[in-house]
Structure formats: C-alpha cells, structure tokens
Image 1 (cartoon, rainbow, N blue to C red):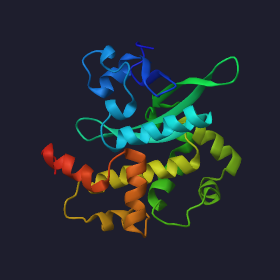
Image 2 (image 1 turned 180 degrees about the horizontal axis):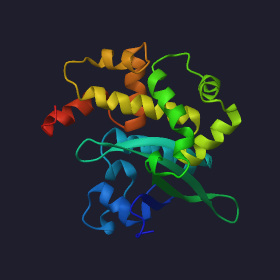
Image 3 (image 1 turned 30 degrees about the horizontal axis):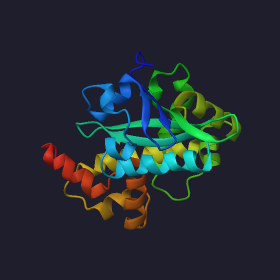
Image 4 (image 1 turned 90 degrees about the horizontal axis):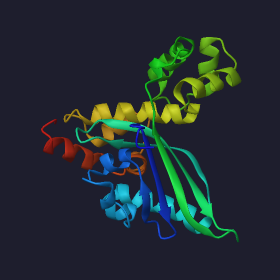
Length: 228
C-alpha cells in the first residue's frame, strides 16, 4: 500500500485508533513518521471538523457494524486546492461477530479526461456544467440531450468518472463553489445562489459536511496563504 500515492489505507482498533497506516496517509496528515499516527484517533490526528467528521464515520462502522461504500468527500491541499476522493470503511469482525476494528480505503479520483471513453460523455458533462445551478436538472434531461438512454449514460458516468450522476452533480457544484469563494467580492450567499442553493445555511452545512471546513473558514485559509 505504500507504493500507491493516491490511495489512503489504514486499519483501526475497536476504539478507532490507528494500528496500521500507509505512506499516503502519513503525508496527508503532515506527520514525519507513520509511527506518529499509531495509537491515535482521527480526531487527534486531524484537528477541527475534518477529524470530527472522520470520527463520526468510524463510529458508524465500529458501533453499528455498518459498511460505508463510495462516500464522496474532498479535502484541501496545503495550497487550498480541492482533491476529491471516494471512501470505503468495513468492519473487522471476530469469530462471534463482534466488531474488532475497521479497515478503510480512500481513493483520489483521477481526472475524467484521461479515460479512453471520455469523448462519449464529454457532451453530457458540458451540459451538466452549463445547467448545474438549475434546481430542476435531471439525468433524463442530460441523457436526452446527448441521445443516450438513462441506463447507458449512468454506466458511462461510472466507468469514466467513477461517480454516480448524483455524485457528479455534487462535485460540479462544489468545484464551482471553491472557484467562486476565491473571489472576495462575492458574499457566501451569492456563491450559494450561483451554485444552485437558495438557502445560505444549507450551502454552508453541506460544504462543511463535504470538506470538513466552512466556506468562511476556507476563505480565511486562503487569506493566510496570500491567495485571496
């Protein structure tokens, strides 16, 4: 797992403490050595809302035995650039069915344009980018625009982008939100409206749940980096 730069891998015990981590997780955490993470929970390794969000996910798996699959998330690099990933978490069970810990994988999503079938979905993606702020955008409208069935288009989206249409729309909206938040002349309410959210509070809650940081806190980070 240490040879996979875009794949985070870890094992945690029943208390949510890291017992195995790979090099990608060590880099993302900013720690000098992997041993610096061992015996710690996500909330101790990743401060603030990112750690809290990860801890809540862990509790779903550790306390309820739930499997999490293809949870779409994004995190920010040190330069404030969003990186999208899909996260899976599986409980590790003992012989009596008790939860002994969990194993987690988080895969960074590669650019869709690198896929061999990208030309087949390029028009659909362009249509989504042009209409994503409309609250009435539906997959069947996109499929009709490009002359494909809904099932065919959904399968293509999954192969090319690794996302469901719903996840893809969410990513398009939030990529646009991140770009607009870099424009200081726009208020957070204006950014929310431009991304298809009529409620500023709903946008803030969704952004925090996705990124582990509020839109206002993201802007503060950009100012600290001299990028705003």
